[in-house]
View (spheres, rainbow, N blue to C red):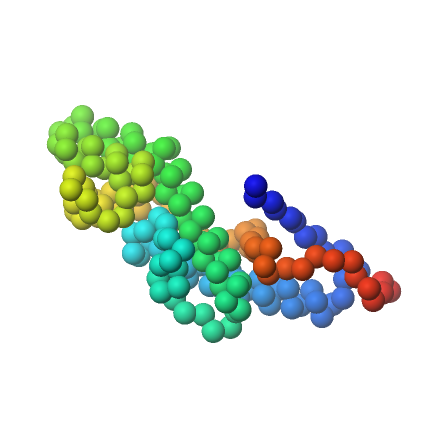
Length: 171
């Protein structure tokens, strides 16, 4: 079972802690966008846990635990975008291309398979050209994900320790 927690900061919070969180947020979003761009340039909607260490760009400012959280966040963002573009736009685009005789039946099936199952490596029935063509259609179908100021930070249970404050003094 997946649990989420939203942490809201009270107005009376320690100014130094608030500034630290703001600085972390800036670095988090910077690296998140770099990871998203890496996935899109490599035409990969997802990456296995084993590959994550070597796939994404190195990061020197953030801890390794936070870096892993950001990488998983980027995979979630890109795979969600990929899946929604397929179901909302690309299925119909592929059908239209086939109806207009711009692609043959085998290409149509390959493109549907690439989109539905997030295929990123060639197989017996799917060529690298099919994958590249699908990504061309994907990028033409709408803007790739961009990190905005509204996007929050996602952390695992390993990055935070929620407990009762012992010396919290409110002014």
